Every structure is written in structure tokens, then in C-alpha cells.
Length: 247
Image (cartoon, rainbow, N blue to C red):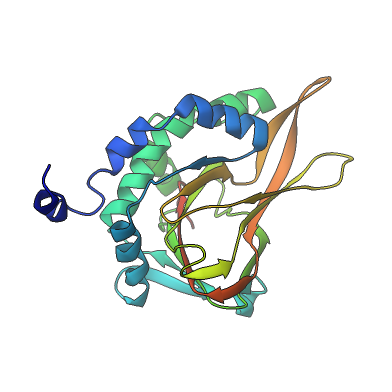
């Protein structure tokens, strides 16, 4: 493909191919072992810039949250409205069927009866029938001194147990600090912390609220929370892909 042809190619048009090309066996092992898995170079710099620039739009979003008003931290984020941007929609629909088998295996291991359908559309139909109709993918913006407190993204009865986040800004160039942080609380143990370095366009897949861990007497459930450490300088944008909709 020539450089001119690549420039004419719509942003996000290669997302499905990139998702399919990921090492899903390695991702499953990392999720089981470490509680998270990274994927490199999922979004191009142009795709990252296009998504970050959407933050200035009023029509692309259904709501804005200023974290300090709710004790969530400092910074802000916006929930996308329908129709989702193509790149966001493709990430959601293409990641889901690869993650559903992992989610089903985790629920089976934990003795949870819920099973997830093969497609994102079928799962969203389940959410919508329960009154969870508002889209949850979001765009987050941080400035110097901003941070995101440890939290879980639970929006209703129906929760898909995995989610993803993609860094749109370039560390060391657009911002410093602002590391992704994941904590895991195991029974009768102190919390374990995972700090995950990401580059522009990289993503992380991680649990929404809990996962199974193998112990000496079988598997048990551990709770997880995630957040972002304080930005030392600059600005940081991230897109979050949550697979269940909200009430």
C-alpha cells in the first residue's frame, strides 16, 4: 500500500485486524497470572490524536464528570454518546468475543452461574432489557497534578468482568507521571500493587472488580481496583472501553 493510500484509509479501519493478530493465548495467561495484560501499538498516533481531539466536542458525549466534585480524584472524563466513534465501536465489538471465553472461564472457576454470549451485541441486548441502556466507553483527560482514585467501573446488575484502556498521549513528551495503577486485595493478605507502563497507542486489559486466583485449596476470588497516579506535568488522554452499558 502506498503512503497516499494509507493516508486515505479511514481512521480505525485496521482495528479488527490488529485485534485478531494479538497473541490471545499470552493475554489469557497474563490475565490469569498477573491480573492484567498489555497490548502494544493498538492505535496509531493519528488515531490517538483524533480521539483525544474529540474531548472538545459537545455532541460526541452524553455526559461530563469532574472528578473533584465527587471525590474521585482530580481531572475529568466524558461518556461517549451513540453513535460511538468508529475506533471506539470497533475496539468494543472486536475485543469482546476474544474476552468472553476468559470471562466465562473465570465465572465457572468462581462458581458464578452467569455466562456471557459470543457477541457484544447479544450482551448489550441483555443489558438493555435490564434497563442498562447508556453507553459507557469514555474519554479521560488529566492535567498537571491530576489523578484518578482507585475504583471499580460497576454500572448496574449486568457487569462484564473485563475492560480495557488505551493511552492516547505520549509519555515523556505530552506528560510525565500518570502511571496506570492496579491493586489486588487477597484474603488475609496486604494489597498487591501493579504499576503498568504504557506507550502511546498501547492498551491494558484488566478486571472490572474481581478475578480467580489459584491457591493451595483451589481457586478463590480476589478484588481489584484501578486508578492513575498523579501527573507531574503536561496533559494525558485515555479512552476506556467498558463492555456493559449503564443505567
